Length: 68
Image (cartoon, rainbow, N blue to C red; front, side, top):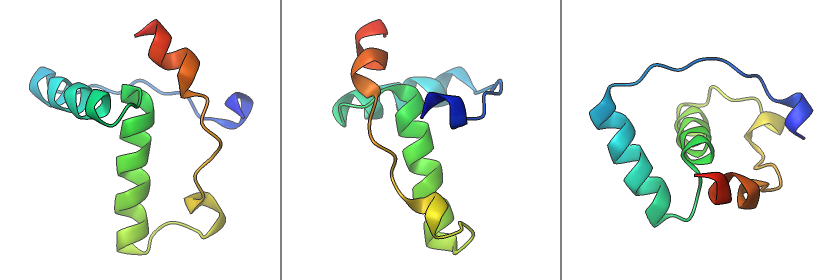
């Protein structure tokens, strides 16, 4: 699945990053996965996400969580 993902730099205000980092930890997700979760949730709510793209991919977070 990692080969199908788009990589790009994301610049965030440090306070926003810290808040997302805390929230992700509370939800047992990596920061990256939590940002993707929040974006997918918002896109679904607004009706802007194609139906197949809204499906949650199998989680590969275990490796990401260990490296954080």
